[in-house]
Length: 114
Image (cartoon, rainbow, N blue to C red; front, side):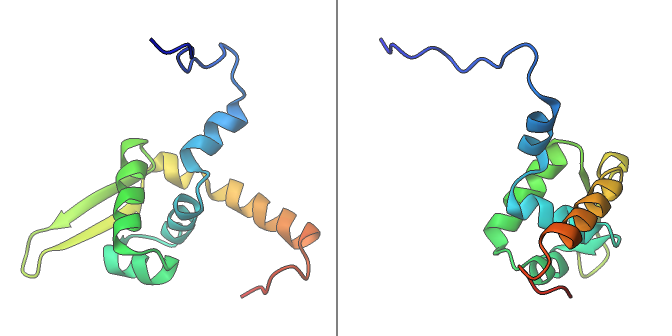
């Protein structure tokens, strides 16, 4: 038998940590940020985020399961899959705006702005 205790979250887990667990990976943030501009196809997201196909597919599945992204399949030839933010995903726009504002104030010179 293992002497390790099962992973149990404390009853008053920090909401910030819980939120970052859902959206906090580099690729999740990149996809969420890209989809703020509107619905995109898989290959458009792949190109704009720089993620490889396997990573992007996994991230989109994760974001779909957590309710941030929805998938729409257009079955006319050629078949196309589109991704967009749900209401929950769209509600992150002010969060991204605040992070951008913070980065402009505190990370000046540490990265090139587009």
